[in-house]
Image 1 (cartoon, helix red, strand yellow):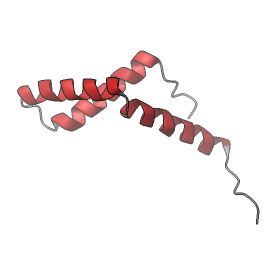
Image 2 (tube, rainbow, N blue to C red; image 1 turned 135 degrees about the vertical axis):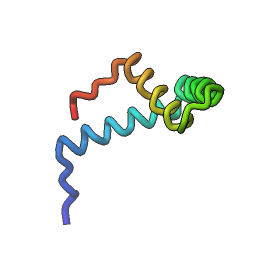
Image 3 (cartoon, one colour; image 1 turned 135 degrees about the horizontal axis):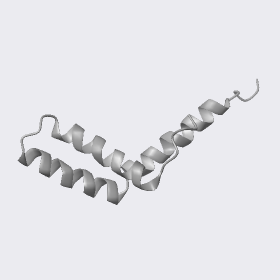
Length: 71
């Protein structure tokens, strides 16, 4: 039995997931998410935690210019 064949899409997807994981565990992301969540809670925004997560992730991806077009 040989090693499983991993196609290019799988490799690209794996790199993408690894990069997003690194971003989500970074101090910069966690601090921004916490700050946004506080602001959103202050203004009684629905699902403040989810929205803060999304906005923080979007901001860091945009700031770093993470290339998404490879997928």
